[in-house]
Length: 363
Ligand code: AMP
Image (cartoon, rainbow, N blue to C red; front, side):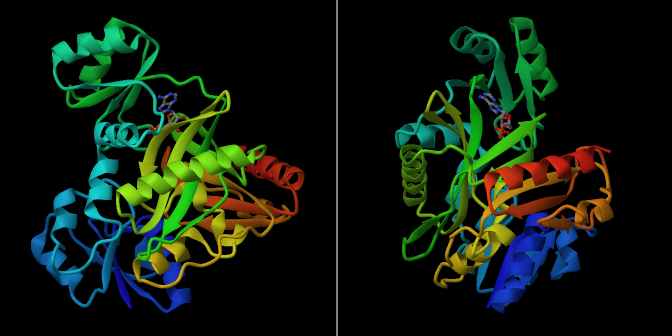
């Protein structure tokens, strides 16, 4: 089996490593010669619109997948009729466009934040009347890790914010005063079988995931069922194959969907040590037609992202239950350089270890 991966960041790296354990060879494509996954698998360095390079990349592949959302849709469509693409290009197109994503939630009855699409200056004025303040302005496309979005507190802010984001297609959303952020990770096989990981609680700041607890504490069966039901509807609607992450807000016991990620996800990194089968292995199993692996837990896990600065790995290793994953990227502000997972027997032990990890990273 040979799997092609569009993109070669840390998600591609962890997919390639999981592939080795399954006897699957991965080939990656990225415009960046320093892309971290190139340390672990064959890397073709080319722009996503280089048709000759895409043809070369496709040679001998059984299936193509992608590891980040900003792949131009045309690059994915290039493979139509040549090599199957999983998840489908429709899932990718939907996740790339915040308005289409919200329309999908609405069409299948999943609650989401109130929003208005903005195209022109007159839409900007109308949007302010509909949503009110404070609100969040986001570009429709290409936003991630808090990039391409800005908080809006007044009409003046809105006009200025829209211009600062490029005055292009955007979306104005109400700010949800959530109690906490949760995500659901699920994997769907080509047979339609779905396996769920337990819900994860996520902590963001400045639009970036900082740390996660798995399973999320204090989730009642009703909330887990509801979240799984939403995720199942999304996967079935998109005729989805592979791992899907759904990010949600919890507010007064209700779930409000924020966005989907049609790929392996940062809030699932803990599954490498914390579940019988990691999200990376299950994604590869699903897209290559293998049986899915068990998503049962191995104790309780927590994950902390290493952002911006090299950590003191020797100190981290002194903490019980710690697993260090560094991606081999050069340090830069706001860049995800690695992640640390801790596994423990119970939530109390996990939270204590996560607090220690965070204090080492803060030094
Ligand atoms: P996103 O790029 O949509 O994933 O947003 C990144 C982070 O910004 C989310 O994880 C939330 O912490 C926050 N955020 C995004 N949208 C909203 C919203 N409508 N209300 C409150 N917080 C939000």
